[in-house]
Amino acid sequence: MIMQERALPKNFVWGAASSSFQIEGTIPGDGRGPSIWDDFCAQPGKILDGSNGLVACDHYRLWPRDVELLSQLGAKAYRFSVAWPRIFPEGRGVANAAGLDFYKKLVDGLLEKGITPWATLYHWDLPSTLEHKGGWRNRDTAYAFADYAAYFVEQMRDRVKHWITHNEPWCVAVLGHRTGEHAPGMKDPRAALEAAHHVLLSHGLAMQRIRALAPDAEAGITLNLNPSYPATPGKASDEEAARIFDGDFNRWYLDPVFRGSYPQDMMKHYEEQGVLGAKGWDFIQAGDLETMAQPNDFLGVNFYSRGVSGDRGPAEEAAKKDPLRYTGMGWEIYPQGLQDLFVRLAQDYPAKAYYITENGAAYDDQLTADRQVNDPHRLRYYALHLDQVAQVCARGIPLKGYFAWSILDNFEWAFGYEKRFGLVYVDYATQERIPKASFHWLKEVIAANKVFDVL
Ligand code: FCB
Image (cartoon, rainbow, N blue to C red; front, side, top):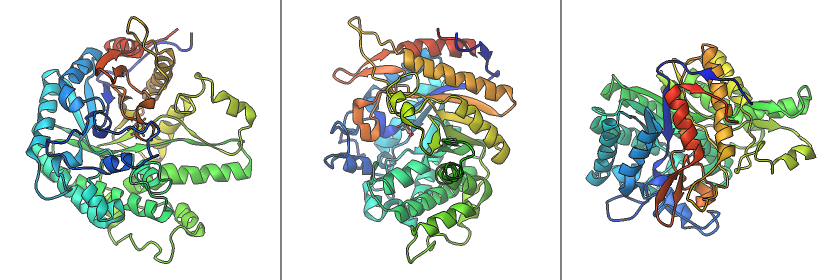
């Protein structure tokens, strides 16, 4: 027994999530233009298993199967992302009718099954043409994004009523431009701040366009947030490091979106670090912060783990092999952090509604001889986190829905196909889909609208 049974609120939105580049496949011939992730995968050594997005889950062709799986799960909503280079192969200019048609069919397929589509407009597959002009370091990309968003929303507004502008600007900025682990693979901390700025600006610009075109729709942004803790509470250097972690990971995005300002302590921190160079903050123009702070209908939160600053000692290092303590990504399992995070959000960044737009775990799944997948550790991860979700709701915090990451195993970015996050196993050799034990459990949870014990 690890937990008591807890009910979720009536009308709680149960869903699952995915993203375009991770599942669709990029087989040429349908007018899609290349994206920075195609280019990144082509560079030797960037993707752990040397793979790419060429076939992925072949969802571009097999989507009816995947809609059927969502329906079997009992999902009320499905969060997918739109590949910008399918709509505008060159980022702007002439639209590609085949790309638009694909999303229309997908959305109609979902609606037929009573599943509400939630569309994310940017989940990292920037058209390569725009990258050649400076990508997110170039202010112009923010305007190109707003134009693409407006076009897509206008085409789809009769059937899509839930819009997410961006997925995880921190990853775009930091992994893409500071650490170089993600496309476009830069290692330039100033570029990361420029990219963050233009992504957030583009969020604000797109929100204005969505409001004008689809006043009946709900729109917001998804941030990945990691609550931050000192390794040794009370130890000054750990407390300070935890503040910086929180500033860099969470507040740098939350403050502009909710308050129309960057956190002063972090501006000072980056200046002291010499990140800005001679040009200083020249990329911030008058009015930008106001534009970023458009009223949102909801905040999407992707929650996986927490940040701990300072030395945690050798025992913690050893625990990284323990699947009850760390997932297959090496991410610490800390469900309490979910509740801590929402308590803090409700206090510091009050929103009309919050949704968990991603939560889940990778483990090294094995197919049994009778083609089943028993994934007790993932199942336990979901149970422990949903238990926290129910507690957050019980506190009266408006957490209104939960999207599991992910419906399918898929292309996990720099880890290629090595890491499996799916509720459904994908046999990449045959494209067979095999629902895992966690899928069957979650299906029961959704049907009961209650989280219950897993042991
Ligand atoms: C998030 C991404 C998503 C997936 C999960 C595991 O950062 O939004 O695409 O890779 O992590």
